[in-house]
Image (tube, rainbow, N blue to C red; front, side, top):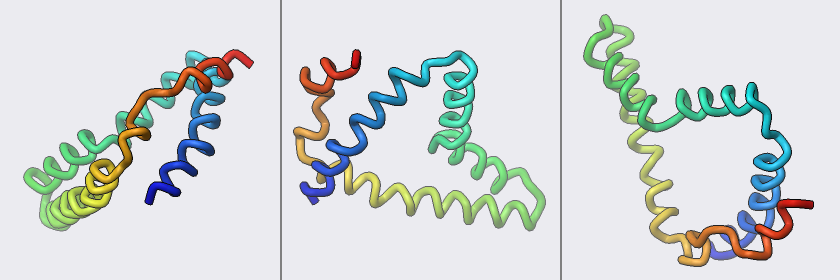
Length: 102
């Protein structure tokens, strides 16, 4: 598992820093903000609960199924977060912060 976390740090961190430093446009920032809100767990949970409680029958069942799928899909994420080494949870090192300006 630690090899996976190391690989994620080595591959995703430079990509994340590149996107955040180079793609800084107002329209893209707004689009990414809206996309992350709509695709977020809180919105998905609230929307599926609302469908389950207030929608007519075929959609009510779909709402309950969506709620169950969201809850079940977050179990492995919670396990992965708990099992992550503490070095992964530390913010970016000074070395990676120096390379942002390149």
